[in-house]
Amino acid sequence: MKKIYLIVLSITFIGFSYAQDSANVLFIGNSYTYFNNMPGLIGDLAASQGDFFESTSQTPGGMTFNGHASSAATFTAINSDSWDYIVLQGQSQEPSFSDAQVNTQTLPYVMQIADSINANNDCSDILMYMTWGRENGDPQWAPISTFDLMNARLRLGYMRIADSVQASISPVGSAWKYVRDNNPGIGLYNADESHPSLHGSYLAACVFYASIYRKSPVGAPFISTISQADADVLQAAAALAVLDSLDQWHLHDESEHTQADFTYLVNGSNVTFTNESLRASSYSWDFEDGQSSTNENPSIWYSGVGTYTVSLISESSCDLDTIEYDVTILQASINENQDLGLSCAQVTPGVFKVLGANAVDLITVVDASGRFISELISTTIDLSKEPSGMYLISIQLEDKIQRIRVLK
Image 1 (cartoon, rainbow, N blue to C red):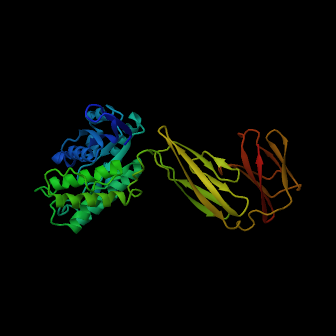
Image 2 (cartoon, rainbow, N blue to C red):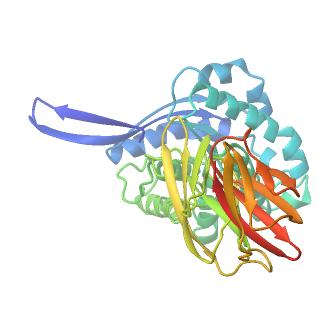
Image 3 (cartoon, rainbow, N blue to C red):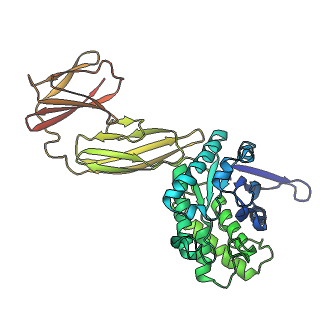
């Protein structure tokens, strides 16, 4: 996916060429990954679809995230290449435990590993391996004592972890549940009721193929040694789990590492923006009315009613992404912006004078991003020590307010 290989067959088929999607992947996990050589199944599946897949695994049996964070071999593997994807998989139970336990015994170690991944190559995508509940759950704790309960807890745990480190998710557990609910005759488990059978590993491989390449595995010629009928079911379940919910799993387009997004809250003519971009380090906002900001979460005032197109450019060292939404200001808040016949004039560089009133009750100054600058009762406003840009002056006289923009 990150690399495009152009292969020219110059002997028998002279002049014929084709492009392959490719992915270079490091798996950090344990036996749920290495059982039945699941990464090898992904490679065979990809090859049968005309794609290229190469991988390395750091998967000692029973390894937890804490164990990996304490392992020099894990960090050596991370630093050994500029990976397209690094898959993180915890011990089979740990993400399903209580939120408090996950917060102290799992999440800090995932964050430590993620920091190392980003330091090695901040364009590598972290992909959480959402595993499945044990066949009959885990009796040691009531909230995970059945398959459905444990599977739901694992789903919640992996999604919380992914949000914390801005990772994507390969939802193997969701596909697993779909197959159990709709095709219970297909045995997904090894005899220990925990590890995957070949069918379970093949299902996981199909989910990873769909997650990494954003392509359907349905119809893939490679089916290992399972029956065609079972392969058809598992391929379809993987496609359904992944491709119908790409946003839910944060599976962005293969050409986009950075994803721009934001939400906003309108209060009168004041709008507060919450940045929800993924994998970005700098931001550029345009609010259409002449205001702009590079703050991560700006707050601004609009001077009039109307619909404004707000755009956000989120950027990382890998790429940038742009998104825009229309923000509608229906009415100003009570007494929020009235014409009191006042104006502001720059009398010396950076110093402004309110004209039209000998005295004011209060003046509030904010910059274009909504950052508070000062409050004063003088009609002289000194911005000489502030950087160049747009400022919003709110002038209060009795119970009325007029807002004036000035450009320093």
